[in-house]
Image 1 (tube, rainbow, N blue to C red):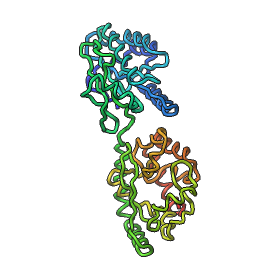
Image 2: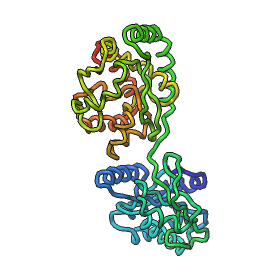
Image 3: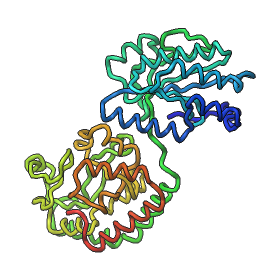
Image 4: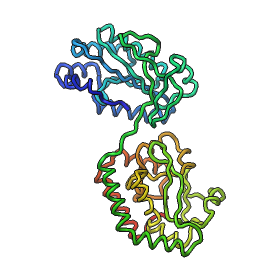
Length: 386
């Protein structure tokens, strides 16, 4: 993720001056909101058409002539770039969006931009952000420039890809003089959301403890086997965790899944059957009242889930989702969301994924409270999933 640094703060105020604002308009330099929208559109297009795009992050060094040369810099950059490329500000820094551009080609453009800045006596460093992750055939080429570097991915993992040294004298030293990093769209969980999760899950476990105890006793007395059921699912950033539920099916139900999968009423990789023969009598009531989901308050308390968010899919189903569908993994999964209260199993899988995306785009405290109230109403009316 592109992070605003302290050294940019001093001249960031300069961007508000009238002369520079006119220069930004003349050279089609986007503001933060416009550039973020262009970035989102390009991401959607790249996922739909299986394309790669790059973003060059420019860090302009301190210099007495820096502020007065920005207009010239924008004009020179615009002459070098394609008409489809975008220049704009993002998180307090100057960035260049290069649609349908591989990291290697973006490295050549970054090299040219550094040279242009040097010709105007402006010191500039660059970093290249790519999306999605470069293919394996690009990796050896990147590694060939600097074998002791790494490409930093958005989830904190590392792979053997190159990290190029940034020139310190304004002159490019190689055809790809930049640092390569995977463009990270992840965002931290808002403080208000985590606070609501802690408050809601803590109070829920206390207030609903009699209901939890009654459900546990009912499962234990009516069917042999454990009271709780756990399953490995994919959460935020693809991290896997165990989700907890009251067991609503007979023992060995997971082993029977492959035999009855042809009867699934849900399209896509998800598996849903309205009248699943594996569900027990008590389990059917627990599902209609949504009581079987209450142990997930422990997952919320641990920070693996949220009260409201896209439902986490089992790992074997989640990995079969297309890239645009897996964008739901950018936020914490939840106990309930739009899909649960406005459709359920009657909604096609693609529309389900779009509902999750709709929540991600309009997530707010008011939205979460509204969805929680709707979920509570459905639970009281016994209109939950069976």
